[in-house]
Image 1: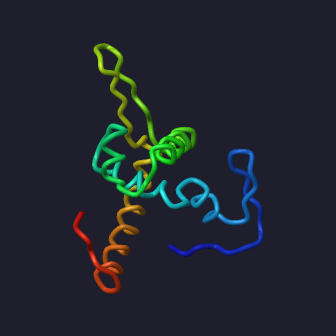
Image 2: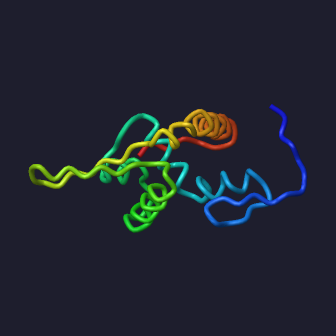
Amino acid sequence: MEIEHKKRLIKYNDKMFSCTTSIAMELIGGKWKSVILIYLTDGKKRYNELYKLISTITERTLSLQLKQLEEDGLISRRVYTKKPPLKVEYALTPFGESLAPVLKSIANWGKIVAEEKGEFIEG
């Protein structure tokens, strides 16, 4: 697929972007969004499951990132209140699932970099 490079503006969510890559990074950029999303490609997860999987994230940051991903339509939040304790699950929406191949490619590339230039530390 060839990417067309020309000067233009793109309006998305009432914001102006000069490049489609900027739109993608608006949605998944930053330190944590893509990490949260890659864990959700395996299926729905509860808040504590995500918190345990992402060992270096703070609870506040996880909460804020989940809210933003939900606002952007990439994940859904389902609250179960029928019986205590309260249960909340997060899952990819169809829009979020459309990112799965991209996220998996990025994760695979990161694994190659880690194997060649880094080291895995078991925790």
